[in-house]
Length: 231
Image: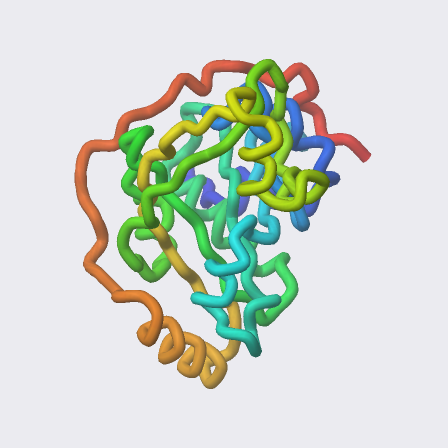
């Protein structure tokens, strides 16, 4: 019997961002919904078995660093990738690669692998992203007693910015150091633009060898209640 190929087993489709929410709030380790501009589903027999989302990065400085003033609006972050366990070999890289074909172009893609979760970003290495080292150390600010499970880059605007919020809220503000993250970049463009974008990247970030180490899997055993594809 001829062995079935990955593309015969799985399908990748654009999905409504709302279809990702249960996965991201309960199955993904971050337990937070990020900014979502594009959402994709990995399907097997018309059943949703994984989600991948892209959104505008929260950091304007990151966009400027990757694209410069001319191309900063082309920057898009692969901010969540969450799938069921026990998939076929290479299914995850197939999923990510297929999302590239469904995204508008040109784009500068960026994604991060969290060292705090013992992640090295092997999926990005398998799909030929450029590794640009570790992100800066960063403090995440929150308000004591306030639940915030969504990403809102304008959350502090009503206070006049994060620094003003600290003055107004005082001890109600709590800061938590975030672990550094491996930063990966991918140019979704034609060869001539890719050459220009890579040259700009080298002026801002050092391209480094892929990091290695043993990955630690987080508990992703949660099974979303809505598995069937919504239409």
